[in-house]
Length: 484
Image (cartoon, rainbow, N blue to C red; front, side, top):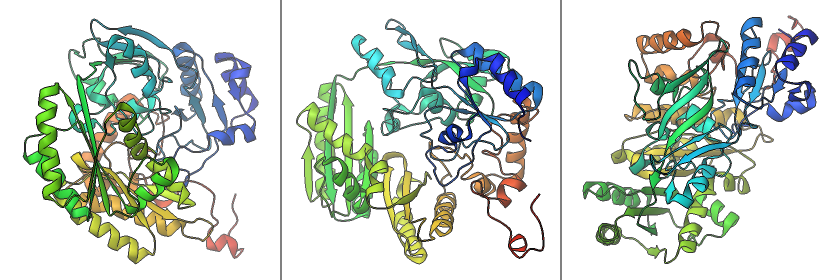
């Protein structure tokens, strides 16, 4: 279906003419999210300025059967904000106000276009902060965090977005405005807030979020440790947890990831080392001091070749700058890459990394690894060159890695979501009854299937066709059939 001029006028009436982008060239700016291998140009891009305009735009979509995709900062890595060719993108970039910071009840009310880090900046004068911290927190928005149930390096101790969101104001797919949850996080009846969080934009669009704030820790201690092997670093992680220590964060990087990050930001990592761990403890000073000594002893016991302890806030920031730059920095050593997001039990980290290395060698592709070691959330980056014709091979390897995580007792995603990227792998993790229940829940919110279609749940169309640039069928190329 192509949107005619009358439909465009309907959206312009709901918003304003200057808030509706119809120029195909300008629409191209919205054709993908951080998973750039999938690209689809939308018919229109809508730029509402408040919740009422979001609702008005969705009502037009509902009345005319137009599919729509909500978009935040476009930093998602699973194709969750991939547009629909015959639909519209509703951008929330203009809804970016911090509406309230309540230091007494330790909560903040924000619009979805506020970046993750801006919440902490607004809370900092009160000695508070917002705990979830995705690596892209300087640019990713809280609306997208809610959609994907984002985590970050400190989710080991503090949990994911769902643990810190008390309520959401939501525009449902029929254009009605409701509130899920409450200022206290409690709600009578089914936990609809919990259903909505992590639903990847398939149940509606959030326009206002109330988040929980935490008191800034009394003490933070951070170290960077090098190891002669991935397995040695993995054993350190297991022993830390076995000792009853719950670090704020435990992150691991391998040789390729370290090389890329160090070239990009010069954070002081050791280039060429097989594995590096970033371990951070926070809390009361006395407790941190005791546990920090235990962590150092565990590192030494497993053959740590270099132990660097951050001696100042600047040194701590440098260590984290290296870790959080890793994804983008990989672009320095590869023209293209896919980022995966599987989860495995901590006890199987070394095994899964060995398997991934073997799979990469068999495919003739390099794989860099950056991950939240504390909770087994892997982020393998499959490096390839589209210009060299390696795209399909890399995409296949990326999917096989995700399914390997399920095989080893884990899951397809820890925080990046399923999106368009892993929808066809869902039957590897869930049975037919599970998927049927998910589909029924989705249909209860969105009977017409207009809200972010083609994401999360497998469909024959999605699993038979790869989103993105049209590729002609061999019979079409031979002149036997004609594309209509």
